[in-house]
Image 1 (cartoon, rainbow, N blue to C red):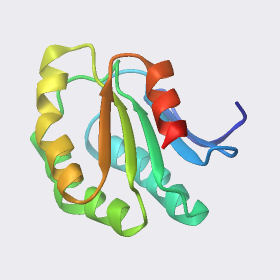
Image 2: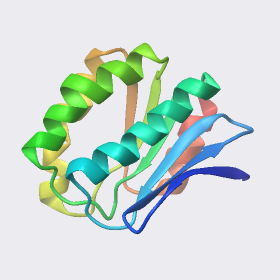
Image 3: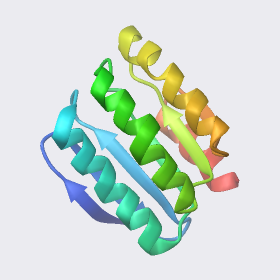
Image 4: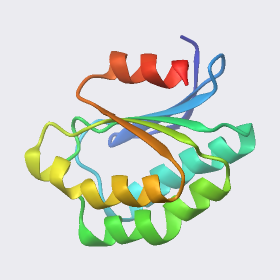
Length: 133
């Protein structure tokens, strides 16, 4: 797969897959606060620019979300992403159990915004599902 790198740092990488037209983010370690927001906004800006509707999240190395990051996702980022045309989310959940638990409200809120969510523990099945929808 050919990816354009949209954002890259020690915390994570965001790519865009041109053929199947999806954003693909990978956390390299736990991330929160302004650096998390900056990373996610870079991906959202590119999703909107490309008129894409799909997002693959590899959150396996992330940990529990801080309350302010959950608030950012629910009240700011999620509504903007849905308005930009985001429709399908393949989520590879954190290995950390507290990280998984902290995503529940986010998954439910995005589903209620009209985003079809599928949850996985590995990247390949997540990618296969995302490409198929």
